[in-house]
Length: 275
Ligand code: ADP
Image 1 (tube, rainbow, N blue to C red):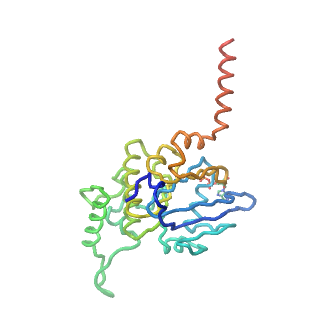
Image 2 (spheres, rainbow, N blue to C red; image 1 turned 90 degrees about the vertical axis):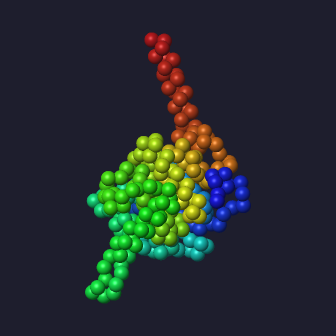
Image 3 (cartoon, rainbow, N blue to C red; image 1 turned 135 degrees about the vertical axis):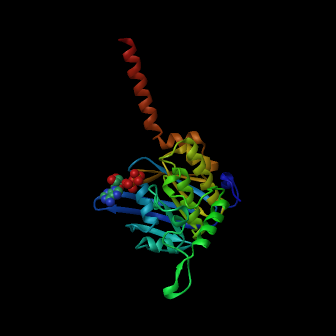
């Protein structure tokens, strides 16, 4: 098992790589020269403010959009995704903020949504409910999620629990790379903690995790590697050993810009005090 400090050990195997990747939407250059490496058993955090290019990056890796420039490789092989299916077939699963779960359906139905188990053949085929309920229970227990009644609708669970179920599902269906799109953005402190624990479990299960967030504190709790996007460019790329939380927070906030603003504000305050 690897912890967040594994940056100091021999590097884990690289699963996904972007080299000099760019994306243009007409005249808008949403991403430019992005180089990024995702390794097995590690969490790569991608941070950035609104409009930094995070969603565009996810869409390229998830096969929703094709990149305009650069090279995308999975396990050393160059790929050109033309649909989300292409990305999924390479073992890349994406858990979006607005989760692809159906609130009124039960937990086990959601777990197997689109990949239902069946028993019997031809006209006698039916859903294998018993196996699906059993496997859902087993997989959630493995992740340390305790849900006493798997027949409960997913909508009755907390936002954090729903995120965890989506993560457990991706792991069960064989994801090698897990992209998490701002999984803690809509959650309070306690719920965020629960989700971060499962993000770490996905890493410990050997997946390469891409954790998209604008919260450096959340990123630093679990991350092995940090990449900051700023107006479509990579403005920082550091392993955990190379950066402290303070530095990460400062870089994320715009570093020098923030310092200039702080000077300006203290000048304004001093001027107002004199009045
Ligand atoms: P983030 O997810 O970090 O907020 P996005 O990837 O959504 O950033 O956006 C990066 C830039 O690309 C922004 O300037 C945005 O306006 C632009 N952009 C994103 N999607 C499109 C699109 N479909 N068409 C045109 N411009 C887009």
